[in-house]
Length: 112
Image 1 (cartoon, helix red, strand yellow):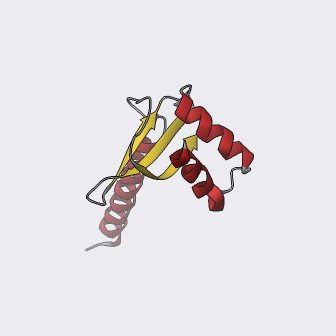
Image 2: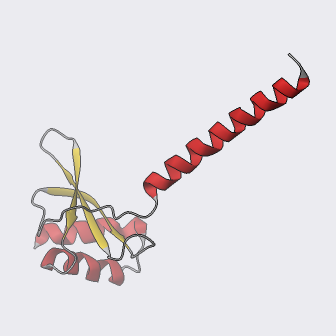
């Protein structure tokens, strides 16, 4: 192979890699995580997260992870202006958004 063919082949490989990276980035940027929401989540909760407004998603999102009876987990998007989200949000602010203290909020929700 001549050096111009090698250079052209290398350039095509690099271009393909860049296109793949841009395609993957495009799929995750600019969309809300929650397509539908529920008012509350029954059962044992293991985690929660609040997602602030961001480019491509003009709403705050609240996601709760529940442990199912078969020990699998399932994420639920919860209405952010409902009682459950407000209670978790108040607790989250009270613990200064400390990831290590999340269980305090989860355990508090079990008691209610």
